[in-house]
Length: 537
Image (cartoon, rainbow, N blue to C red; front, side):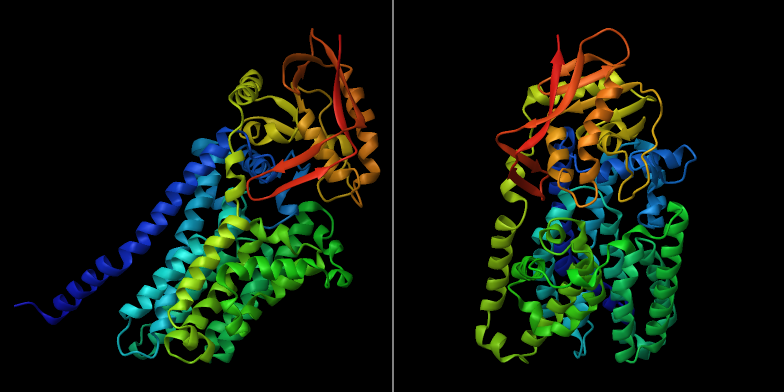
């Protein structure tokens, strides 16, 4: 005869097989599709936005004993952002020494974050019922997972570059699920183990980046209002300590006060980017999270951070910056759907089953018009151009000191001492007035006209770097006096010391479009002048 415990176990397993395998399958499909797209983008040399190159460079230097030093930036990466969680990825990176490994890890983390989100939805939507879960809560949980995995901001942060900030998604969702579950387990006397998990995940979340604390502190305030005082105090106290400690660490690594603090300005608080941000983040969910707007306030401190940096708008929607906004948005969505399930909202009650239909249509519409779908057809380079780049990289090989422009850096940083051509021209470090210190001699110099045009787009009229832009051509041409072309392609040149043709670079009128096609961040602008390369016969 089966015992009661055996019956319960069998029922739980049946429930698992029936209800949860859909979510596991959806996550698996998402990861498989994204890995394929990311791999295609990588082998077509389309990671040219610098971030992947910097992470690859810093982790490669870490394996050589120079903890998170980036020759591309000219300083320690922890002098920009304090992200010690990245060190946990070093063993995996050491096995491949390729930025592709980081991209796959990021994809798996983003996809896996849908699982704790699903658990949160089941807990919240079934609260107040005698059974731990019910079919209705799990069905709505599945819908939330689909809305999440098809969210345009999720796609764009996954397809743009690698950023450690995206690792916060599975950790913070898991952390919040532990807190929600602990409240339901209070009567069973098993909260101790939940609290241990809560603190562990809290510390792990803080390790992602210094400003994660700005999201966790409002969560702590919410826990206090919900009478979860132990959880509230540990969250608020640890977050404040970590935030202050991180800013001190950043200053020490960069040997100057935290540089981004100087960019904050109250004058930037009000701008049109706020409207663009709200539309871009809430439209995919048909603005339903606004029903529970108090939960959106969990992202209030993060919002103020980006607003005072002047970075609201498409730059948030189309990159990794959306990470810390999506968490409170989906929490608000879950509580909004809870009102619908429990028939507490007249508008939602009137819409009835039109609610899930509207949510799906809004997400699909946004995925096409706000997401990267329209530019995915540009992910493949012409085969001849791709082969030319590959030839350049093979010619350089490994263990060289290289000065390179955007397109080459991510693929050289895993095994070379790589320096950035654009920071060399500007003679300034990233986000700093410090001079860009470089070696006296180079094994190879790699540059393209396309990257010089992008340099013009980014820095010619820049509020800070603009003053150094024109001097950069004189600085680069002086260097090129000692280097000759050993390999060339369509607008691409590989130089080293020895026999070969000379080239010079000058700022000249340019007719046409300069396009930044980064799959998730595309910008086309008519520009007046840009750098061109002249080959001397």
